[in-house]
Picture 1 (spheres, rainbow, N blue to C red):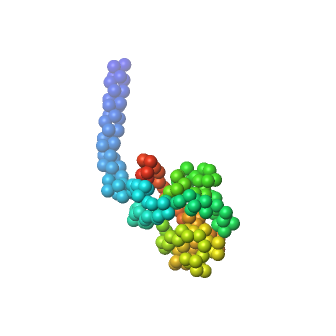
Picture 2 (cartoon, rainbow, N blue to C red):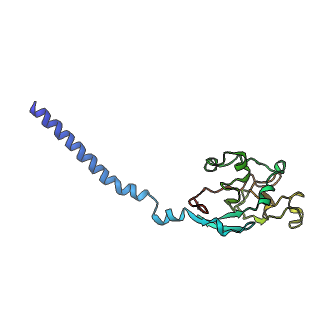
Picture 3 (cartoon, helix red, strand yellow):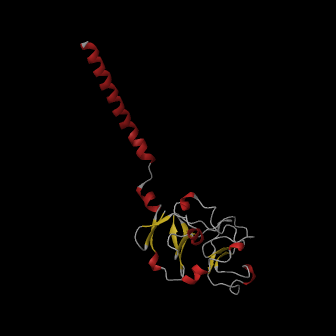
Length: 196
């Protein structure tokens, strides 16, 4: 009986030592697979939205791409309603999963933002990757015949003529297949967002 107990102890000790040795050998490989600290730092961008004046658009770099941050006025927010028939996806149903976490109400699907006054979205046209211009003024005077006659204000991509409203929702009958993408972001302070 003593031999069996001693044998069981030796098996357990040898197995434990083998497990510890395997973990010690695998750990450097697992650490090498993790992104470097500078890569992780570049994957997020902090931005103070209070630096954007009402009606103003600023462009921020995130992962080497431009991101629009628009401070919408009450008039701009009011102009988001009433032109759903002109839009391909007015309720923003075709959105990536990352947006669906907070895009739950109809108003959030229209404003496409956590706080209605601040819009944060990719500045890359969903057609072929150009950067749309910002024309917030309703009407057609500023853009001539390249926007709908009842233009509510928004973004126009000069490369192939795609138009988006002030929530980045794409108009019908343009080449762009989707709304401008809302980038993943959250508020880390009352006026500071973390993009990424």
